[in-house]
Length: 180
Image 1 (cartoon, rainbow, N blue to C red):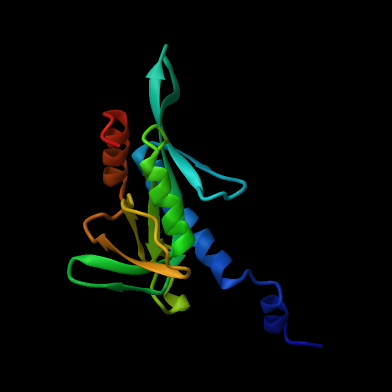
Image 2 (tube, rainbow, N blue to C red):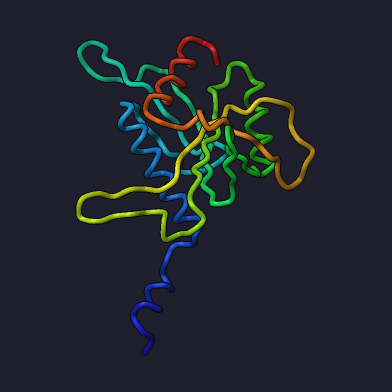
């Protein structure tokens, strides 16, 4: 009979699925603190979900109609420079996002990168007092022309573009005033 620990490992999620679960937990917490409704897509066709503003109308809370879509990536393969996060984004994802931005009437779709530490033992820290997800999310509203690269495109996200409840509300405001 195999030791119990080995049997448990046979049923573990893959590392990409663990990263996805942690990234979803992170953005769920940020959206909740910002007071926005978060929807995660059942099927991924280049958009992982939406943040939707909630307003009060006729003494009840309803979605306002202002929405921000996102593509969520989680990775340990990134670098932090003085002012930027450097990440190699799949070329097909890059193209999807820049092409969508060129459609003026489309709901804006940002890239969210969840940058985790390389060591998996540091991803989730917990004890009786608290639970912390290590790493940070950064957002970028990609602009430009589609790439002819087949593999990836190196992008740079300003470190000041951390996804926080405050920054998320600022992004929704950009949608509301028509800046995006």
